[in-house]
Length: 256
Image 1 (tube, rainbow, N blue to C red):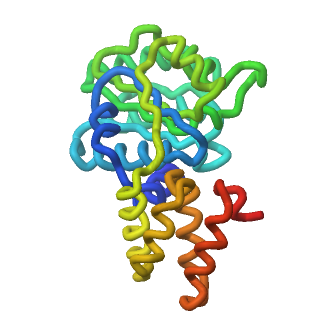
Image 2: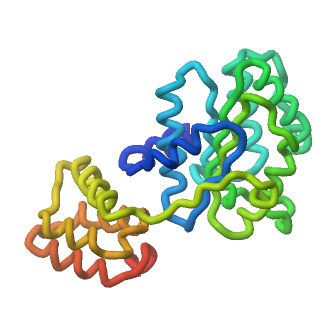
């Protein structure tokens, strides 16, 4: 399944912060935000994986909007949730086929899941949802589908970039986790873990060269550099190549 594959690809190398996990382990609603490439998908993927491992008898539904084009509309998000609730709790309820009907029954299904033991619903990349109509902010569409009072035993976790798609959540006073850049020890650990996946390594001076660069605090930038270095063919020219990459300031610049 596309969602499982997407999650697995983000879990393989991720430097988690216990403070983030602790806040996500609460109940109710929470929104994870940060710049594009700041690690929102990786955090949710890692947290969902940890939750599934720790609580195999509890229902957690993770929907990654960016995993495929078919996952990027609100109807697919709701239908995914209803299917998982029906399967997990063995419900003899029909899942509607039209967007309007899906929106209408969502509160009833959440209430039914609450009565039977609860559910954690994680939606990664709300800002990537396809809007209909286009004038409506995707996040607002999602919030309009949810009941004003989330039932007991139901947790809703979403992620979105900072900007217009965050505003609807802050207007409802959802608690917020804002991701910050990697500290130098976290950068070093990520480098070591990533290279070890491919039975490769860098010299201490090369690691220091990367770790000390301010732009490597950005997870996507650091990950992109590591991917490029992994396939670079000349060990003798590797230090010079690192210097070349570090002349850029963000991930898109690495491909120019």
